[in-house]
Image (cartoon, rainbow, N blue to C red; front, side, top):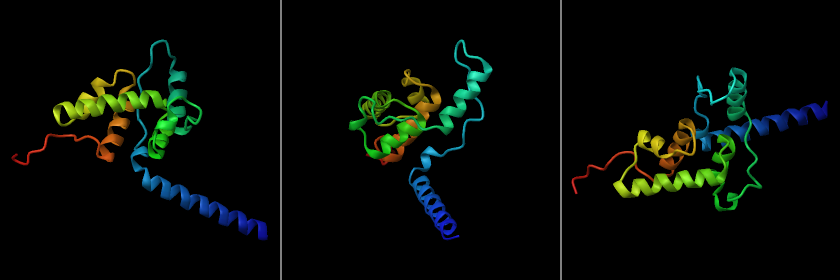
Length: 144
């Protein structure tokens, strides 16, 4: 009975910890995709399995190239969104450079620029970079 109580307390601690983590990374816990696009040569079943895998299973990026260059939040993003660190860094670089060039970056333009990943992944990276404050999503109209 003492072990049952300890197990319940441990589960409660884990639940609280995951809730706090979810609060800190809310941009990762958006509503799952309601539809998906079938990739060339992919069956309906393969598409459904791919969607489940992308939403449910974080990718282990600990041994991938470039992971040491990422901050903890960036690692978490790559793992949960199943993005290779190299792809993330390339898309991030493109978004920041374009935002710097014209002063802001709209989501539709960002999705067009990110040719090495799908629209959902590009939007996820865009939301993350926007939340970090590295880019602006509209031109400033401060009168200067």
